[in-house]
Length: 428
Image 1: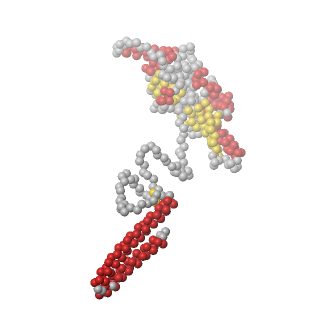
Image 2: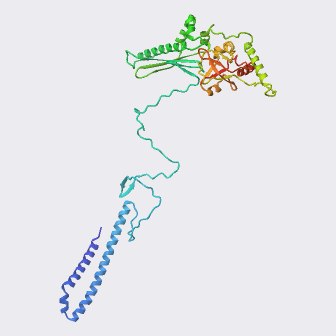
Image 3: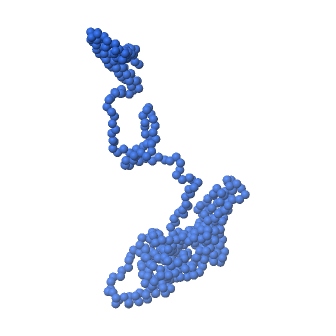
């Protein structure tokens, strides 16, 4: 606040200035008529009066400035800020390098200062943070993941209501049922629907099983119709088939999957006396040996003049037989034969050991070359032969060249892997 003394000084200075101006405007003519002595005296008085007025005005200005500075100092001390010093220097704009370009601003006023809410641009580095959106990127109602069937190794033969995996010898069938008469949420309705789906799945399993080839001319259904005991056994085994999965949807559809394996007791009861696995004589390769010897003589007599004699020692590390039958349209069967181009049998149920054939099957059918190489049945170093054709009503019997037949006979005589059923066939 400005004091009363300071206001009085300012008013007195203003009054003196006004009096001087009035005297100059109104008393010019009267002063000219006065005598010279009077003029000199008045001039001296007026000069001293003007100096006094100027001093009073300057003093009043200094007091006003001091009072204003004092008041501003008190205001900044009360607000916690440093005092602001008045400066007569004009403010200048300075250029600041590397200023981020901002395309949008969201300014807020705080205490008279404008604060920008725009974040700085990314300047590089690895410290990047991401905020989790409050809402999902895609609505759940509009996004549905595609159902993917898991990969299963082996040669898979598909049927209308199931499949056969010829690598593992597993037959799988599926059955479905829709609820009726009761509420979907009731436990009784669920059990009744699942039971009906299980019955349907086992019915489909028996249908697939009856179509499986056993030999070149015989299917499972032929054995079931000819042997009542086998029929009763198979029906009982179907009733006890393993349930691999069971689902029940909200709209009341139950789906059940059942399976059996063409190995062990089931295969032994199914084949019974219909397939002979025993050998014809003490030497199962007696017939093959006679053919192989004739082929060997022809090959040796032809090649004696073409190449010098070398040590033709056979490899000692073959662990099985791998037959490449891709692109020949082979159809898998429980039993099959391998023969040469003349029709002489090299591998059949009469060659393989019965216990081995019933426990593990006499052959594995692989779906890819990689699966065949990785098979444990032929181990790490199988003898690889290329099939030249397939024969028989079921297209399941394999034919190899005479030269390959000779090689197979010689190697197997040393290692006996055919008798142990270590055979894998690549189908596709």
